Amino acid sequence: MRELKCALANLHQGGWSCPGPSIGPILNRGFYNFQLLREMMAPTVGDAPHLITVCEGWKWDDDGQAAALFAAHVLSDQLGRPYVPLAGWLPQIPSPPVVFYDAAELALEFWGDRHHEVLDRRNLALFHPRGRHRSQFQLKAAHWPYASGVARLEVAKQDARYGTDPLPTVYAGDLNGIASGPHLTRHWDQVPEDKKPHKGKNIDGIWVPDTDALDYLLDPWAGGHDGKRTGNPLFHACEEAFGVTGPDAENALLPTVNTGPHNPGGSGLLIDWALHNRAWQGGVVRGSVRVEIPPPDRTPPSDHRLKLWTMELPA
Image (tube, rainbow, N blue to C red; front, side, top):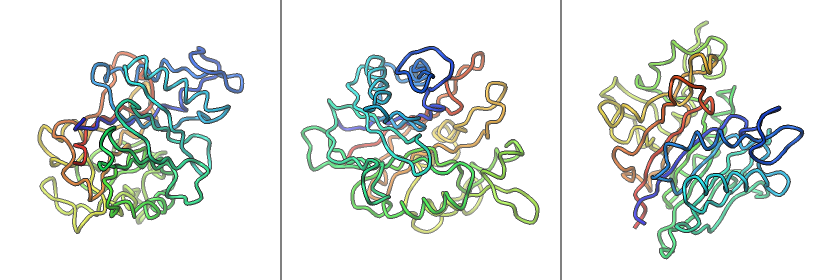
């Protein structure tokens, strides 16, 4: 195993519906419709990821993690890997990120669940490829606050130390905002007016993108499409690994939130991110970062789109 295939999915409300088809455990007179999870992961059949981060695991860790375990069975049956679930924690709502890892290829050394006393150690996984104990790496799963740029900045500051961690680290999740740069702000004018206060900040009566939180980790963008991030960033975006123009960037920088008649309130922004720290610089496999666009003729399985990328594993 030399490469680590990763996926990031935000399944709306964890697939919970009331009423709805019962494809999964029953919860509070509603049902989990994990057919939606199958549909979202369908593009990876035949090329299954080793690591899957699913945001909005609504109460997946309740009742002995029944929903998380059922989701793992669904993914394992569909994709052919023996996935094990790791249910995370969020401070205000029971909708944490849940990580699924291929237990045949990866050995888990640490998982910071809801009981860990240090907040920035929660939702942190430490792995090594089986048989390679010294090739450790980390995954930090994240889901930043939806409606407040100030709150997002606080989380960025809390987690910033992983940027200088000596262990290669991926920071992945729904970060609910964009970073600076014309390749990211180009869709701002199409954001629904009622969403701009959530993703922006008001300057002299005009709502502009609030990029402070992502820029805290990535550094601000200087220049146009031929520009770059300034300074020495704590993290690097996998989406920008091979520039922000050209064929490699075309798919990597697509919006991760659906819009149109099936999700009319969607922001249409790139808010689901795959970052890596300094220790993993140069680790993104060229051409691997992509956003899966659902077919336009049917309702997508979630309001967010599936993101995929591959990292070269540490030696």
